[in-house]
Length: 418
Image (cartoon, rainbow, N blue to C red; front, side, top):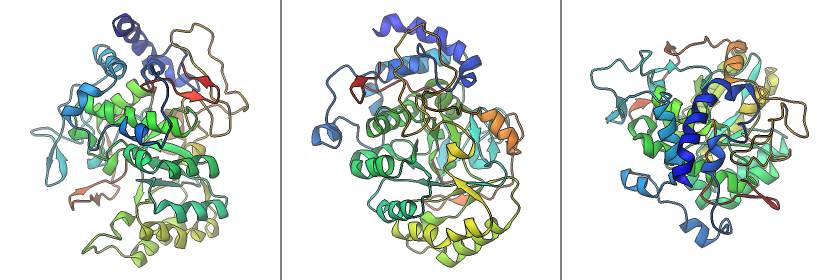
């Protein structure tokens, strides 16, 4: 299968660079669907056998040999098509990504750790005017339960950027976010590493395994949105996410630092977070707010709950990330309740112009970025305040193009994705 598919993948990689954003989902013959096609009977999600079928975290160079060949073939095709910049992985110096002898915030690299905003077709930082994009990183975890209770009680939808290995270890909580809350599930990589420090192949594993396991939690839905851990991305990482997996990167324009609340010797306090949120919510509504928050600890969850009333009292329209942009949650479904479209590899049927069950079509990242006031073009350096990463280094914290699908057949109801 692999040998015969490589020329096809290379051809479509070129076509997708031009036209992928013109449709609500990737064409049926896009290589992403081949990437996530199961070849063996599906294991029961949550079972010990299912858990064991996924890799240990963190992924390393030694993990590459087990990465599905179709994913690596898609990377190879995109690279040969000139879609992946030739940028060497960053080196971590005291926890901060560095590029020896190079300008990390110049247009060639455009490191988001240095506050450089990338091509708005591939990445967003600001919500549209008057809107708050509600999102939480690092779940699912046992500490997610009280947050989910609160969101349900207040009929508040959000986007959950899940760590893939956390989904593996807390599958029931992932199902709750999807089934009970009907919330959007996005990608926060498999093992929460600085993506710019990884090889192209390991990045593919970090994104691919996470998309695969989320698809198993969501009835075959392939995540469209992703967030890099620590907000650490550059032109190379963005291109891999977009051209191999169809992923749109969502960063943020305000950081609560709430992940530090349960850390030893932290100087971050609940009162300090409350003061910042009060200032942000009482401020101008241009651009809208993309605030970094976490379901990582009891304290971070409580910080959101305590300050949630500020959103309403200050007149903000609060939704999940995809919803604030009028975009789809997933590559092959509008959201959690609309049908999943089965897309066969190499199908030549015309691609529908809208999703079944809705009149809404996805906005392009470029259009939404322009509407929210984000200038177009790569290499835009901003003045947003950086934050400390987990190990104390100065950086950003946080973590979808076509997902080349799952190592086996993902069953959507009675039908398998093909």
